[in-house]
Length: 137
Image (tube, rainbow, N blue to C red; front, side):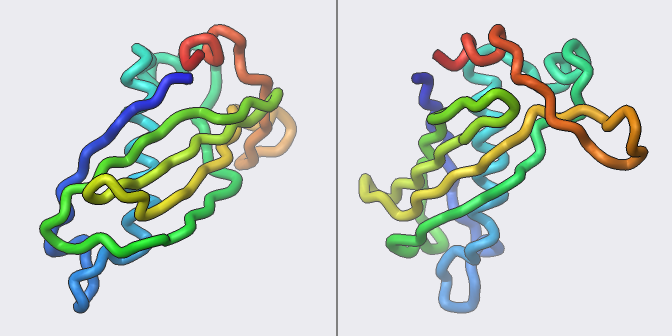
């Protein structure tokens, strides 16, 4: 299983008045870390989506457990990997470490999605190609 590490320096604007990371930032970092994971296996999302006729991999579910705070001035590491494949979706797990300790444990359930052929403005889940899955093995 391929794991990618995305290092992030926490800036002043990432924190609340108590200088603790404002929790929605973790979800933005999860999203960025997913793209970095794809890059790490040689997949450029723009090219992959165009090639396979999908609009993207939207999030169907996201969750996080906040175990310890990170603050302005800290450098965190987001360890990301795909831990589960289903026919039309997959789970990207994200573990955020601060000074070697697990600070946040989260995941995203993402769908391999194309424009729905019969319902304008809607998406339709499609099977994830085996060639894509193989890149993360």
